[in-house]
Image 1: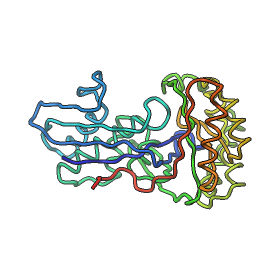
Image 2: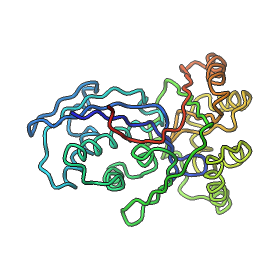
Image 3: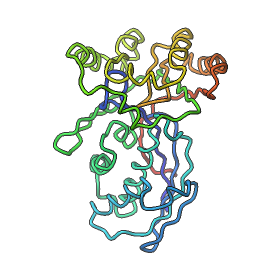
Length: 296
């Protein structure tokens, strides 16, 4: 038996569409054990996912193939605080856990970048998987089917408050909301802010964060799919957030603040959003620096 902890993540951070991802101090916990071949046992998992199509099982199997070992049976226990279909990387937690567990239970010969490549082939993009596996702020590029990933530090005082509604938003619907082409002006708008954002998060510079956490490639189109977006954004900025962005493809929204103000901010914005309905709740998070790891 191996017990793993995997952080929640966000992709599409500000101008970093399909490239930048962040890991947070909100976690999914997994237990894996090898069973006799052909046997699958699940605990804490919806019945419809208790099969070989489960993303954790898919990643486990893909990693077994990469290691050249015979497929084993799998016992899988899940206890997660990461909400499903809310833009906080629930799929990435499953994939990261499955790949990490298969590697650890079969000798641990694969490096983290190998696990990132294996899981990206399943998911299709690495922006959530990189921080889920490695922690921190990650910029990723897929080059000829191989992922190139660079990890950056994030200032200790920064906090991210996840504003999570009761309703889901499917990734496929959020993808369909995007245009097929963008203007040069909008492309330059995002590109010019991406480098600034990396420095802003590293330094914790509030002014730079306000400038850099802006986007024209996905947020204007997906905001229309999130009930109450304008009201939530107005409330967040009114309460002193440096910026508010869509987490991944939504519907969760992320308000950026600091350690000194985060607790009071979360409490007050929950109160202000109550009249909206939709069960908006606020969760204060710091940046996870560790990524997927074995729990003692």
